[in-house]
Image 1 (cartoon, one colour):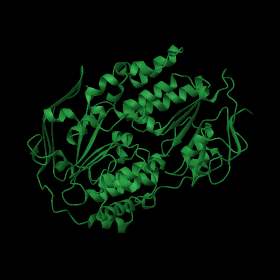
Image 2 (tube, rainbow, N blue to C red):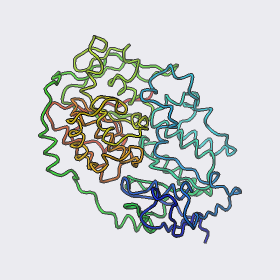
Image 3 (cartoon, rainbow, N blue to C red):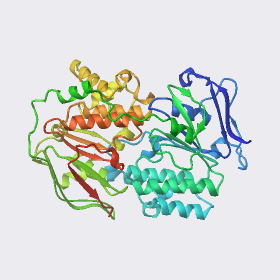
Length: 482
């Protein structure tokens, strides 16, 4: 039997990148595999070993890419990582860049970044699936996180790889596109020699074409089993993960003495946003009252994140719009930093911008001062508050670890703690459960629900999964793509 990838007693040379036991792994030529495990279990470490990023001590990884003409790993294996869902993070990206149109001339357009493809049928199928034609002349920084995901998938699939490895490929995609991607990958595995390896945190999302599962736990690579075996032995996530003691602590948290106490939290009056020829929002009227919990939804590119960027004053166009926050009209004199003190926020753009080599607790503390990174020394009281919220999110043991050394799921938990750390009057959560494993998804949902039961707390939440919404949702807004 042809093994396309084989590792025997694999131990990386660098101790920092080792699993706790030697890796023994074979993937046969007709197998499509899901690598599954909790956040921080070592899934990305295993994949980096599979693709040869970390050289091994004795037995190198063996590949057999037959019938591919090339023997090169870089030609045959393509890997889309979690961060790719937010675009190319080359260090030049900064938070709010997507909203600053004066940077457009210095950024490429989608058309120029897509490779040539000799297979016109594949190209047409991908362009139709992901709506690429409508994106071709858009600057890369103007793409929504979902559109960036579609772009990255198209860019990679156009190279016609022998093995495609994707880290959480369905995050950030609306329901229709998720279903179509499931079908497309299934068709490609039937019609071509493509083999698919998915790295999944959300294990109720395993596509039908997957044949085998490799469980990863506590930096151990488990034995490969069939998908049916894996599903049969799956333990159900409890109905609630947050302990009653921690839920009570959230509910009993003392209230600050500088609250606004206004009936209207957000007022948008005939707000329109345009980029070039494209209208993102057109004469939108929207009022969010104190204590309301809103679900904001819509297809990829409909303007959800743009709308939230206006509320948070991260979008320069917000100052030309008729917007009031906490009863104060934008531009009427009050500093936006004064208003931001009352808002907690997490988003894909924020995660993308956080390439900061700082201890995790400093990332959480930056939420107290609304900075990307920490630009002032932590006060003694700040440390206690940050540790309190990190404990609530179950990440207290990560506080001294560098943010860049954490898994993407652990990073998301840190950024969530950052959003909650000042007990905000307005909580804005844009795809908050991206990349989280099943238990952490339930934990964060529990925390959100407990927080929403606090007096006069207002929330706006974006998600493409209806089952992620907390039971406390009171209102909904659906944006249609123009």
